Length: 325
Image (cartoon, rainbow, N blue to C red; front, side, top):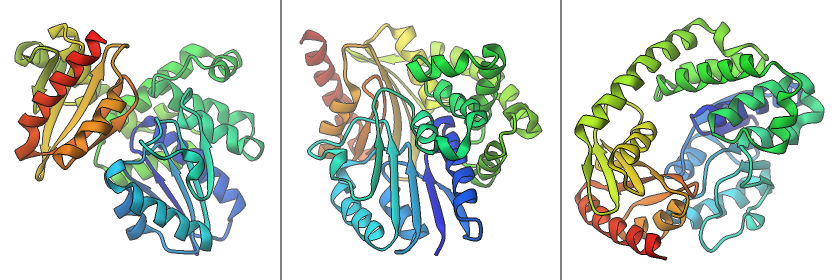
C-alpha cells in the first residue's frame, strides 16, 4: 500500500500537491508517498499506471473529461472500495454527472482554487503557517479575490506573497514537462519554504519573464483571425498566455493558441465574460474525437490534427451564436 498524489502541473495543482504531501507525511509516516502530474485527457490512464487498489489516492485540480467519464467513474469506485480516494477540484462539472456522484471523498467549489480547497480540508493538521503556501496557488490561478484569500492576505505581507506566487507561476511555466523538478518543487513547498529560496526555480522564473515578453511581440506579429476567433499556431511559449495576447491584439471575443503534440493539436483558449468556453468545448470537442473543457473563460482542448480545421470552423460559428445570445 502507498499514497499516490495525482495533480495538475500548474501552480494551483503543484501547491495542492504540496499541501497534501505535508498532510500525508504526517498521517502515513511509514507509507510510501508518490507524486505524479496528470491532466483531464490522461487521468484515466495515469490512474491505472500509477495506482493500485488499496492505495490512498489524492487527485486535485484535474477536471473530468466526458470522453473518459464512464471509465473514470468505474476506476474511482474500484479504488475507493478497496482503499481511499479524495478528489479536490474547482472546474465546472462534466456534462450529465454531478460531482456528488463521484465515489470517495469529494471537496468541490467552483468559486475558489484547488489550493484553497485543499488547505481548508487539511487545515487542522497543517496549521496557519501553510495558509501562505495555499495562497500562492490561488494567486497563480487568478482566484485571489475570495473571502478566504483576502482574510489570509491581511495576516501576511501582501507584496512578499505576490512576489513568491509570481516566482512559482513563472518558474513552473518554464518547467512544463520537467516532472522530476516539479516533484522537487512539491517537496520544497511541503516544507513551507519560499519559492524564491529554490534557486533553480527563481532562475527559471526570470528567464520565463523575458521569454514572455518575446512571446507577446511574436503573437502581435503572427496573429490570425476568423470572424469571432483570434488564433496563433505554434507560439514560442505558454499557450495560455499566447491565447490571452491574441485575444487582446485581434479584438475577438475568443483567443486560441495551438501546438502539435503527436497526432493532436493541444489548445488553450481565453474568452470574454459572456462566452462559456467550458460548456462550448465540452459539447463540440467530442464531435471531433477530442476533449475539451476547463473554466468558463479559460479552457483547453485536444483535437486530432485532421479534424482541427473543421473544429475551428464549428467553434467560430458557436461563438457567433453565443455573442448574439
